[in-house]
Length: 81
Image 1 (cartoon, rainbow, N blue to C red):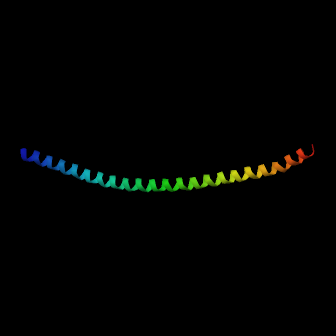
Image 2: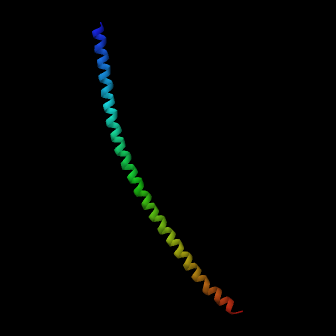
């Protein structure tokens, strides 16, 4: 009887060790996937930053052009007085 219990315990320990190995492999895969996702996130953040910078430059250029267009109109109205 005790030999049978020992065999059952051995089988449970082996199953537990097998499960532990599978979980370690899964954890390693998830770590790799996480690293890849972090790299992709960083790349997207850099691209987004560049795009936002271009929008900011465009907005500044448009504001300057608007100011320049308004300046001659102000000069012509103020010089007639």
